[in-house]
Length: 202
Image: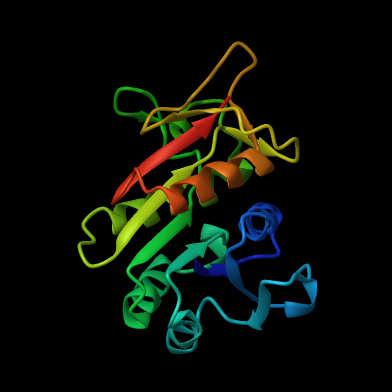
């Protein structure tokens, strides 16, 4: 597929880029600093601004799918969604956050007493993004939330999927960047969560 990946040089974005190219997809890596994108046979790096709706829509045109892997507090969901809509691309995958996942009925992870203050603004903004996507009928969107801890690790390909509840095991709640990327590209290739949020964890 022809994939436009916004935020391709970040922690998650770079792993998604690697997973996409590993599977033979052609990727337009849209970033602020194209020189930071790892070179590859099927990779074209383009300079883009997530706050420039018109410019972003132009960069997205002609792709089969858009993936956004940008921080919520360093972007505007309204601009991103409108740019995708204006580009004519029907499929949109969003790298979500864990903060809006439920840990108990009606209680979100970021509302728990131990949730780090430093991450609250990002978690709230992720919840706002999801709320903006929920009524969307024109774009076929999917929002993939990681587990509570997402960090560098191994690409094992072994993980569990869930919906709106935080996944945990005896070691807590975690997923590697690498396995998160596997789950996202799996969804790209075999859609199973159209206009829904889902989550991935060990």
